[in-house]
Amino acid sequence: MQALTIHQPWASLLVKGKKQFETRSWQRNYRGKLAIHVGKEPLSPLEDYIDILFALKGTFSFDETYFNSTFGKIIAIATLKDIHLMTKELINKQSHLERVSGYWAPGLYAWELTNIKRLPNPIAARGMPGLWEVPDDIYVQIQQQLGNWT
Image 1 (cartoon, rainbow, N blue to C red):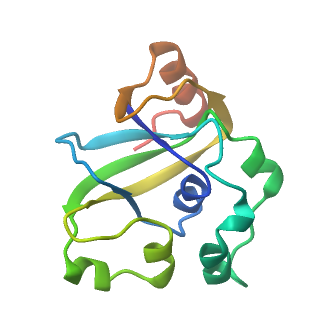
Image 2: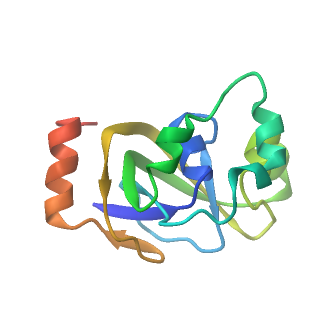
């Protein structure tokens, strides 16, 4: 299984179903199961994401204890359904929240993630740039928590 390291708060927004796409400047041919790993450190304090917090106002609140306990851990499994080349048309179809919680510009890529399953107990793992292979021992822990997920 492949994994992708995503910084907070974007990782939590994906897991909570508030965000559907992860934006990247690169693409891969891989499609299938993808572990969502949280970077070991936040890029900046949550308060710096005022646009995201404002867009979420009244619809969602972060569980700060959970949020702060996820750094450097795999928190969910998703299906990487497709990777879309961003066009003005695709960008204009996105919600305000989707646009402020990613870097949207023509020529970049929107990774479409579906079937996201949150792990009951996040698993510590060393992340890496790009897509990386989940170690066998961690894969076993994921299976123990989620069983035969689809």
